[in-house]
Image 1 (spheres, rainbow, N blue to C red):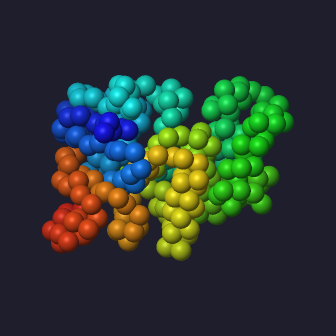
Image 2: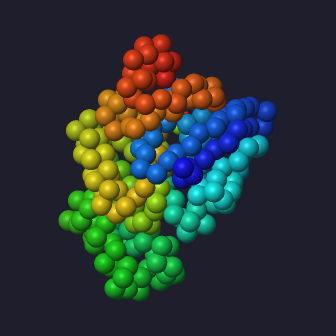
Length: 249
Ligand code: ADP
Ligand code: MG
């Protein structure tokens, strides 16, 4: 079986600091992967490399068999991969509708300028309503992003990635800064939405081990930039030393 996304002996240095060393992982169709590890382990760097935002210092990253090292977010979205950010990447003064319009526009190949005519575009409008329904944001469509709760901001970030109708979604701490109840609500919505829309795989960075245990098909643990474990949750959670290494600071 060809992997959907594959990193092959990826190294990434910042100056002479090695943030990732010989990372090789593959993500297959239908998998939900969690990337875990203590602060500074290289999780965000790995996500940035996997999404072509950062070019590996050495090694390759391929998506559906073609090299995506450093291709950048726009080209990546065209090829079917979308991502959300650890620090929610939304514009506080845009409304929810405007935010989702901008996200949908890149899939529908519309120019976003002027925003007013984009909003009147029927196909964009329908795409926005659809995604707003999926993520329970319909009643918020005409409010500014800054008026949303932290949980809703996270949902909007995930919904923006989702509006691209990707084959694969990567999310860096989709639930950081939200309450436990909201975390589960966000994850359930995301997973249901992905199933419904045919998203083939999800990669998340997550600190909350309850969420990791509950939702992952496989867990990739990083420690000081190396792969410490790449296991199914059943195996991973049987190893107290591994859990301790990952929870870290
Ligand atoms: P994590 O997401 O697991 O907390 P990061 O990937 O953000 O880890 O960072 C891994 C290591 O690389 C950390 O020690 C961090 O300080 C360092 N680092 C991250 N980004 C940069 C950068 N742009 N320049 C220099 N060092 C960086
Ligand atoms: Mg991080």
